Length: 242
Image 1: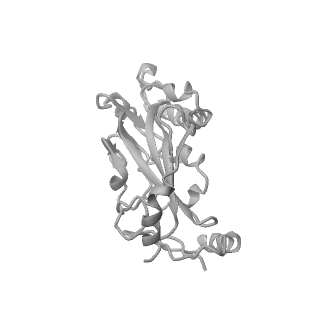
Image 2: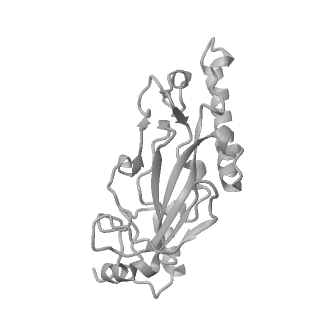
Image 3: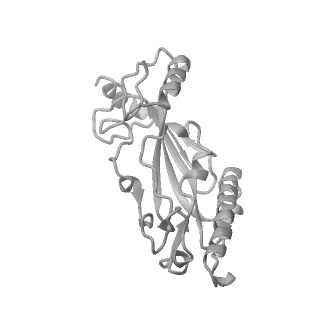
């Protein structure tokens, strides 16, 4: 039986059966998410961030009980930061097997520095690989004008979500002026900057980067690939011995 990360309960049981039925039976199921897993950094979402990312969730001064941001949050955005109002929802919808994500999810409402990044890790139980995606932030205005269609698609999905939120905000903030509603330059959206793929098996060093393929994408997403397999064969063999 395939081993899923963390606990497998109720609604995941059917998914477990599907994974076991469809997976490559030649791949030994000896992996589980933890400190000896490729790309593991810890159990907190903060362990996977780089740069200044500040969560506003749970602060009623900035976020409503239903999880939508108050206009006050936009009026007090820190200098050189974007507000992200849709978490990872729109970027996850464009990542294969994202329902299997094992790294911690991001809070929904955040102040994010424009140079910050976030990592998510997604295993593929069918082909025995695990992929780390490095996410960067762009203003929705910039993302909508990006040359990469995936980045545009992610931004368009975020705009649809935000449109409904802002209409609700305007109605619920009695006496609010329309000029305080944030523009697309005030809001950030995550996009995929690079990715690394490794075998779905333990490694012999905590947090080891056991990558076999890396795609870099700061400017031309998905166009440049570097295969590090020849340099890592020894490490992979050692890692498989655990």
